[in-house]
Length: 203
Image 1 (cartoon, rainbow, N blue to C red):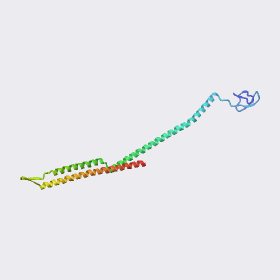
Image 2: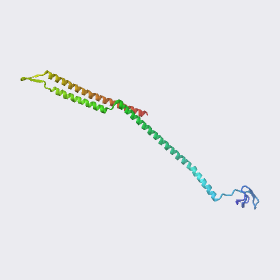
Image 3: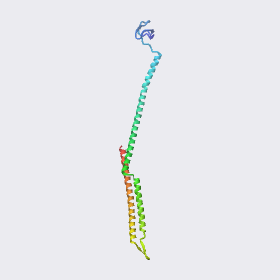
Image 4: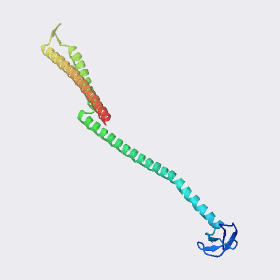
């Protein structure tokens, strides 16, 4: 049953006619169109819930979009950081490879320097000891009550002094060459460090 109000006299009317058809008012005989019936309370609640749900979805759309953008930005940042870390590891490995190759070319000075210095010092000590021992050699021989110089011993003493001086000079040369090698190694390492700094700066 549809309830409505007459458009002419304002009488409250009830009818069982179909909405959209026309019917005359029994009071003023005004022909009125039967309106659509008012929705029930449950229908209105359902409509309100649907409208509220739609409004909530519309309101949540920007927040959801912002959250998705933040998630994508965080993923892109993690990917970029991973790429940077891989590049940094690759650059570090390349630097170590270059430094190892340079060390192989230049040579590690520790063992060579220690060996050169050790040999040089031993030669210097051997030369000093030989020179002192030979210079202190007794070349005199006793003939009766007199003591005369022995030419053979003099030659031996002279040869020993020459050998001692030669050993001393050889030791000095060995120490000098070791120091030169160490200086060249330091120069090469500084040049390598400068080249590495320049390459890292240009990178």
